[in-house]
Image (cartoon, rainbow, N blue to C red; front, side, top):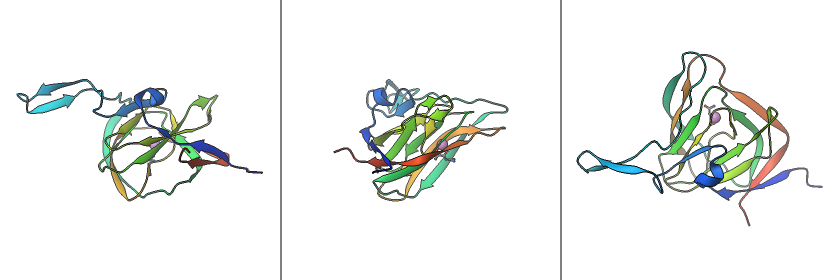
Length: 167
Ligand SMILES: NC(=O)N[C@@H](O)C(=O)O
Ligand code: NI
């Protein structure tokens, strides 16, 4: 009997991702010209959430190593004190794995494939897999929360999930 559970990867869209945060992309975003029309501002694309004591926003770069598919998902985590945004600094795809909370533990995860030009802002206290680049080492601009308190909670699944490309 197959003891692992399978998750089929879905395309990343604002609508599908809405329960977990926002998709950061220019496609379909509100924008307006600034700098005498020489620049277009794609405005207010995501909601940065900062909770807890002495909270402040952090801007970092994560240099992630690639994962192979199918992916064995054994753990998800969440940040109870703040959101976490990932914006790729390359054109390569990456996976975003998220899950709803069910009485303090994650429900069945969902896996989204980000297209070139798409990033995500994962809402505060939302279960997610760690940064999952595909194909090659990739850099991401990160906006998340600094300050006092423990901002990381992990959940280890009793049985792994097998994350696969959809048929
Ligand atoms: N731990 C850390 O900074 N990264 C994770 O939060 C992640 O989501 O990749
Ligand atoms: Ni995280």
